[in-house]
Length: 434
Image (cartoon, rainbow, N blue to C red; front, side, top):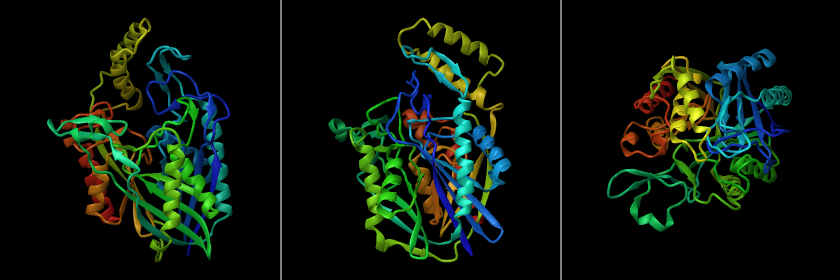
């Protein structure tokens, strides 16, 4: 017997916070454009239980994920072994880790600042209470699933210059120069799962591959971005909570990033679910099944850990006298953050697998580029890649992307050039053995 309980909890900060997602920020938040939520789903089959948590935030690094697992285990019994923790990657939400201000001219002076414990305390309390509520409304369910093609919403921002074969990153659709580029593909598959208790839809989960960077009206306004609107319209259309999971979207952004784009994309996705009623198929004999594989990787940028503090402090002092952004401080900060996050160049990165209907969710703690998700699906048709799951450890491109250049292959990756191939190979092996 397969059972599921679920709930959504509000995790909107009640006080100014530092929003993650853009390095140019140097002020605290000044308002709320859209509220943030965490979604909790509890699955049970016999004696096996699994927890799926979806969170409206940019990402939670491995260290902070481990802290969450420990707190959840103490309060609820769930831990990292049976928790699938996914971030939506909205660029307008607070985080749990320390942060660095490198752009001058704001309310916050240049420097490195500790995490905001007040927000984490509030967040973990809400999530723990949500787990208790989800356990209380658990009931037997059936799973229906569909793959819905959704195109013309997003594009691959790693546009390749035809003459050189090199990448020029275009954060907005390059209308005026479109003939100059080869536009790389995106993952247009929108995976949807419906959980039904009798004739009632109890919950809907959607997985889509597009960066939540639609901009909004306020650079310092809290927002769940388009995933928030998707979940809002699911509630409006079906009367049940909606849950959002990010796919391979490291190089994919919305066609439209301003105005009503957040609302429009959320509406499109929710409407696609409603219009695809006849595509849904029942998943026979749903199971609770999960595992974690640790993949050994090496940091890409070597860090002199003994001199790191002195080098960063010197760069910071020099930059304090500048009115413009200091690129040297930016680069040293990039490397310095590695020292603070990783005690060694050798890191074990978790690859998490979870069965959902007939599919296997493959959670990677990266902003995964499209090619990796597509290659995984080609090798394992039942595999569905989810980004920023169980950690947030930078971008994950294939090695060929480093030759092409572009942001995602210069500042974005934290690990060695072969990390993409290593994670992909580990994922294919793990899925086939799962």
